[in-house]
Length: 93
Image (cartoon, rainbow, N blue to C red; front, side, top):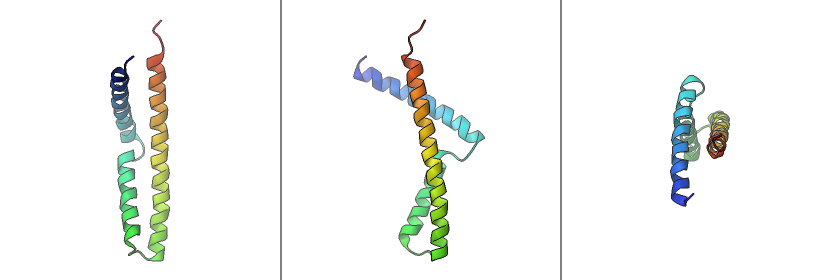
Protein backbone atom coordinates (compact mmCIF):
# COMPACT_ATOMS: atom_id res chain seq x y z
CA UNK A 1 0.00 0.00 0.00
CA UNK A 2 1.43 3.34 -1.00
CA UNK A 3 1.65 6.36 1.22
CA UNK A 4 -1.07 8.06 -0.86
CA UNK A 5 -3.41 5.10 -0.38
CA UNK A 6 -2.79 5.12 3.36
CA UNK A 7 -3.54 8.84 3.46
CA UNK A 8 -6.71 8.39 1.40
CA UNK A 9 -7.87 5.58 3.71
CA UNK A 10 -7.14 7.78 6.70
CA UNK A 11 -9.31 10.56 5.27
CA UNK A 12 -12.16 8.12 4.70
CA UNK A 13 -11.87 6.95 8.30
CA UNK A 14 -11.86 10.52 9.61
CA UNK A 15 -15.00 11.26 7.59
CA UNK A 16 -16.71 8.20 9.10
CA UNK A 17 -15.67 9.30 12.58
CA UNK A 18 -17.05 12.76 11.94
CA UNK A 19 -20.40 11.30 10.88
CA UNK A 20 -20.57 8.98 13.90
CA UNK A 21 -19.44 11.71 16.30
CA UNK A 22 -22.09 14.11 15.03
CA UNK A 23 -24.83 11.53 15.43
CA UNK A 24 -23.73 10.68 18.98
CA UNK A 25 -23.11 14.26 20.07
CA UNK A 26 -26.57 15.30 18.98
CA UNK A 27 -28.00 12.63 21.25
CA UNK A 28 -25.74 13.05 24.28
CA UNK A 29 -23.42 15.66 25.78
CA UNK A 30 -22.24 18.84 24.07
CA UNK A 31 -19.84 18.09 21.26
CA UNK A 32 -16.10 18.54 21.29
CA UNK A 33 -16.11 21.75 19.27
CA UNK A 34 -18.58 23.53 21.50
CA UNK A 35 -16.75 22.43 24.66
CA UNK A 36 -13.45 23.57 23.19
CA UNK A 37 -14.91 26.93 22.20
CA UNK A 38 -16.27 27.46 25.73
CA UNK A 39 -12.89 26.49 27.17
CA UNK A 40 -11.12 29.01 24.92
CA UNK A 41 -13.53 31.73 26.04
CA UNK A 42 -12.80 30.94 29.68
CA UNK A 43 -9.05 30.98 29.10
CA UNK A 44 -9.28 34.35 27.34
CA UNK A 45 -11.29 35.85 30.20
CA UNK A 46 -8.82 34.54 32.77
CA UNK A 47 -5.81 35.76 30.78
CA UNK A 48 -7.33 39.23 30.60
CA UNK A 49 -6.94 39.41 34.39
CA UNK A 50 -10.17 41.31 34.95
CA UNK A 51 -11.98 38.66 37.03
CA UNK A 52 -12.38 38.74 40.77
CA UNK A 53 -10.86 35.87 42.72
CA UNK A 54 -14.27 34.23 43.10
CA UNK A 55 -15.04 34.61 39.39
CA UNK A 56 -11.60 33.26 38.45
CA UNK A 57 -12.10 30.20 40.67
CA UNK A 58 -15.52 29.58 39.19
CA UNK A 59 -14.19 29.91 35.66
CA UNK A 60 -11.25 27.65 36.49
CA UNK A 61 -13.58 24.99 37.86
CA UNK A 62 -15.77 25.17 34.75
CA UNK A 63 -12.65 25.03 32.57
CA UNK A 64 -11.42 21.88 34.27
CA UNK A 65 -14.76 20.22 33.57
CA UNK A 66 -14.69 21.29 29.93
CA UNK A 67 -11.09 20.10 29.55
CA UNK A 68 -12.13 16.69 30.88
CA UNK A 69 -15.02 16.57 28.39
CA UNK A 70 -12.63 17.40 25.55
CA UNK A 71 -10.12 14.76 26.67
CA UNK A 72 -12.87 12.16 26.89
CA UNK A 73 -14.14 13.04 23.41
CA UNK A 74 -10.61 12.77 22.02
CA UNK A 75 -10.08 9.40 23.70
CA UNK A 76 -13.36 8.13 22.26
CA UNK A 77 -12.42 9.38 18.80
CA UNK A 78 -9.00 7.73 19.08
CA UNK A 79 -10.63 4.43 20.10
CA UNK A 80 -13.05 4.68 17.21
CA UNK A 81 -10.20 5.38 14.76
CA UNK A 82 -8.35 2.34 16.07
CA UNK A 83 -11.49 0.23 15.76
CA UNK A 84 -12.04 1.37 12.17
CA UNK A 85 -8.40 0.70 11.30
CA UNK A 86 -8.63 -2.77 12.81
CA UNK A 87 -11.85 -3.48 10.90
CA UNK A 88 -10.32 -2.17 7.69
CA UNK A 89 -7.16 -4.27 8.10
CA UNK A 90 -9.10 -7.49 8.73
CA UNK A 91 -8.88 -9.64 5.60
CA UNK A 92 -12.18 -10.62 3.99
CA UNK A 93 -13.06 -14.26 4.44
